[in-house]
Length: 269
Image 1 (cartoon, rainbow, N blue to C red):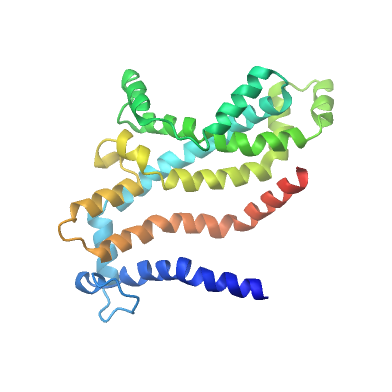
Image 2 (cartoon, rainbow, N blue to C red):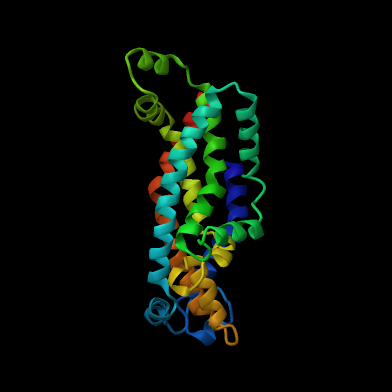
């Protein structure tokens, strides 16, 4: 009981207070929000603030662009990462093991932006949504590979061998046997990917050109920069809250499955 009390005391100033600051100031007029206080609004401007964000903040465009990036990236990384993890987990080749460790380093070491931009320009993909999408797939692949490879190594080969004896092809073994077994850890990896891709700002800043291609973090940056001389904190906080809401929805829906996947993965290991 005492440890939960201590954790609660720690969480209040570091988690709840910033969240409350964003929420309450997003409902205030510009002058009142500039005080950055935790008090309730003396005058409510909730509807006006969010209407301005929708009209001038590029929220709907950013939301559509973020979904257009996040969904294909997550699907591609999960499927390709699971296939790569199967190869890494079953092969004894030193070359593949070396490739696995190099791919694992991508989780810790971000790729250099200058060679990435040069490569995309060579392929005539610089500034395009497709170029950004391919970059995100390549940069985030290591997360799923790192999570799933250990899981694959802990799985017995008997089911795969039995399916091969019954005439199943490699693709059928992967789709009908391996993917269902990897579902818990792949779901955890997908949630981590959604958070990383949705919040990505660094690559979007350099690889996406034009406000019509901007994702939500980039839309927020452009919106805040456009009012930098007289920064309206109420509008910035409203945009931040709207940008975060899809992730909150994912967390509410997926939290039980994420915990179950982590627990099952620990038991498998």
